[in-house]
Image (spheres, helix red, strand yellow):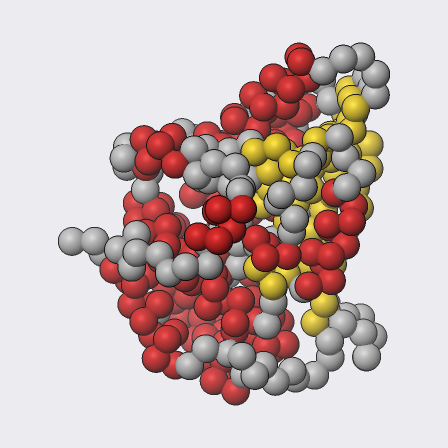
Length: 325
């Protein structure tokens, strides 16, 4: 039970991923953090970073984002994203279109592993009382440029032992080691945390659920460093290569003068992207933090939480992904 619980926040939250730096690379900073209130009446906060990198007259902001966040978080992001010349965004499968927006609201095949992950995320949305990234952000904005794998590219990579079920199997092995910061190291600790989580789920207390999962999500990068290993994975390093290629290709076609661009990707991608930008000669100037979850003191009753049967079906689907035989 401990091992299963260890990896659930990665799928319920945002599939946060980051690649392990090379021996010669400068360590990159965190791009997600959890801050507990220091005084009574103040909220706990899960925050994501916006870090600026400069090279000559070209600046790039790495805007880390969680897939599930407060509505106000996405509203603020939408407003700030209007100021960039180009926003390079993640989306496996190709650019976001009005047709894709329509299809995303329809039920996907229950046999599709990616659809299973999306189902888990939707369940997490209901449990936590948060908004989903695709619903909250304006991906049809004129300055948005797709910078991710197509469906064919993703399939080609996952056929090489890099599929979702393969990564989950690898994640379970890492969890079993007990060396992941922020994750329960013993069965007793895991049971206590699981009791808190299940109590929050069954009572519909979304604030307590956020307080239980937020600290784990904030430490997810150390987990993913081990998950990526030396060769990297299709979820992080391969996709980050595409981001850099897109940035360079667009720069080569644009005229002279100052340019301000952004990379809008999951928080776990950012440490590796920071290393890549530094190696290209970009220098980090400043970092700002945005509140993605604001968790008020006390309980919060969530009227839209899924029922127990729905949750069990989703977890059953996850177990099938981990044991496809």
